[in-house]
Image (tube, rainbow over all chains, first blue to last red; front, top):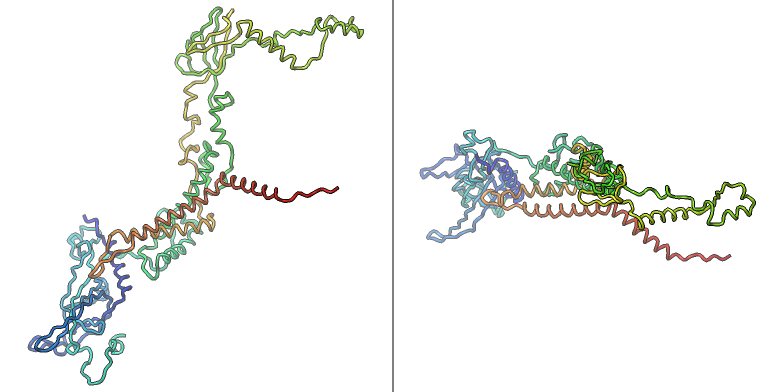
Length: 183
Length: 388
């Protein structure tokens, strides 16, 4: 019988995490692909993607340093980032983060390469813990804390979120609000 | 379904039965204060800027405990002040928050044993016994039932302590012959000179001071002690030796106590708990919160805050670090506990100092100092010069 890591303690972690995310107050816009209207070409690439209305989500961001690589085609800049979401938040908002989704943050667009949810507290996921699922345990034990998305900055002209080749002198940054995407 | 323990959400509505012990739930002031106190505590702990991971019930518990703590200290000091006055008194009357008379009963109780030894009242029965004295027999065995008769117990089986032996010489007054009758002092001549000589049957009276009688009786007693084998006795171990050797059969009485009664630790013969016997039976109970003054309630509030802080610290420090998405954090639990303990100690010291200052002893010393100081001040006032 498990005695350590009960749902009561998990409730504390949830509360503290929520509070911390509120303190940090870092929010991203999550663009979910509409697969029905996003067609692939011969190479499995979609030239014109469509998205659902983006969702604003609190997160903890690890923004990596930009790296530059020079080759025969010129200079290529890359940046990766890790976006960690409180799983309960996503669950409450019914958001499912997947590879290929786009995250807008800090005037950059990140395409999600990998999504993981293996950060468990007390090493247990109550949704799959055998004792919990079989009903042997009266209380819930363990806690699945986060959804962690690894992403890279992608070129904004390929993702079809904002118009980048209009020929007009645009300001360096137009906020999603100004773009009319999100209030 | 994930367990979700509610934490402080900014308000609470107390209902009777929500404190763990329920000692004060029925007291109107307690009920009206508790929600405000809880709100104050939460704000002092950081709400609403930061979350306070305590549900309202935890705050209620802390508040109730704070009242208990206050009552415990105040009652303890009252017990300390009044114990001597209340020792062996009935334990059925509640004394909490009541004025207790500073009676002397406790001191008298303590003095009972001295009284016993001094033969003044005391708390041990004194019995009477007798020795059948035979002519010519000087030594008697006090444990012999053939010669000694007890009012209570048996001389053969009970240990006893002789308190007084009634074996004394006849009072000197019985041998007090009027020395002034007849002759020796020339009184007859004096009466004759007044013309009254023929009227008297040879007896004359003279008014003398009382000390003359006392001196004469003392002279008779000294005479018996020094020149004769005076009345007396000598007790060694279990034997009594009478002086002078009895010249006839008689009875010598003595008083005694039974050792079993004298050494009895439970002289009150009361049911356990019916009399005040120690710290645990002195009848100081729960305080009436409604009677606690604002000074006391302020202490209670501050203590409740520290208890809440300590509890919050315990919750936050159950795990040395907590996971957050993609990282982990360390909360300030140990710091909260440390601060709370320090402040709790300070509050208790503060309360004890106040209670110490309010003890009877301290109050009397204070009045003494006040009186001395006043006297010194008065002495410095110039005295008026009387001009007639």
